Amino acid sequence: WRLKGALGLSQVCRKWREVAMATPRLWYAIALSAQEQESMITSLMNTVLPRVRSVPAKILLFDIDSDCESDIAWEALKSCQLHQIVSIAELEIIGEDSLSLARLFWPRGEKLPIPCKRLSLAAKKEDPTSGICDMTEIVACLPGCEQLQAEDVHRITISHHECINPIKSLTVVNCSQLMWPMKGLSNLEMLYLESIETCGAVPLVGTDDFELPSLRSLSVYLVTQFPWDRLTCPQLTTCKTYGDYGKTLPKFLLRHRTITSLEAKISTKQDLCALATTADQIESFYFSGDTALLVKWEEPDLQSPPFSKLSSLYICHEKADDEKAQLSLEVFDELVKSRILEVPPFLRPLDHFAVAQLSKECRHEEWKNSPFFLNSSKTLQKEELPYIVESTRYLLRLTWPTGFKTND
Image (cartoon, rainbow, N blue to C red; front, side, top):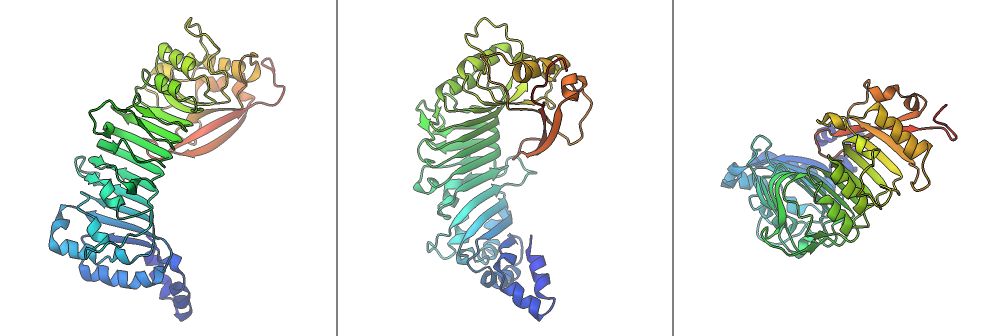
């Protein structure tokens, strides 16, 4: 973090020290270990707190594990004096357990709530069963928290309480069990869930529907028991999935006609056919699966042109295990012709067409021998991904000059 640099600048000369002392943003990033000696933590915080002033702090607390139950460790944590910080922009806690973290903020029992915009919790990665956390208990100490994130925490509960209403963004990654309330989270706009073994509303056993009235973006990657049939999101516009949701996703999309941007893995003709007939409103489609399904539409069940409003198509095929999911020369040529160059009147021409790849270097593939590819203009765009296996992917965008003909 930045404190070493700030201390170094303040020791160059008297003038630099005066400037450093008068610049709160040099001191706002603070990293503290629960295993550190109390005297060292106290000395550091006595130095930093007056210099942070009213600038929202960015704080990392780590090494919080079962040893922190000892009086010595808790005295060290209390010496962090977090209750004296005026405002927190981001609080990141790395440890084995939540361990009544309210004591960090209310060391003498008095309630002194601290404004905090973003809270991040992470357990020790080497222990997959570590971390049992009721996030509501911690959020209650941080009024106005808008972004909540948890990673590698074994079991998470978010209870119904007025303190969770301000949350606009919720991210949970690598969790054995996630339980959230059937009420509350009324202002949640973004929900990102990945690698969760059990996911459901509190209580898990039940049949009642529940609503996220403000949700606009939903990402569900490798989550089992996700309550697709019970969740309603009247303002949802973006839905991103990765996993075996071919049977449940079409029904969810049918109930949510507001969704115009979709990312999904489709493995069978039946699933894609169901998707095309229930989600004809889709305008942007990140497609992963059998790419031939995008151009071969001999299915009698289709009563209207598939995805007729589609304006942006992104093919994600490099991470596919199935050979059918690899983009072939034949499919590439047919996509370009039928969706961009020779579009029938009942389909909307694509404004954006791209193929996703995992590295910046373009590997040799058969479809890149196509005259359509060779005569296209190519732009490589880096796209940061929040958590899934590859943290970065590249979109190879392809365009053709106006008036380009298939026989050029």
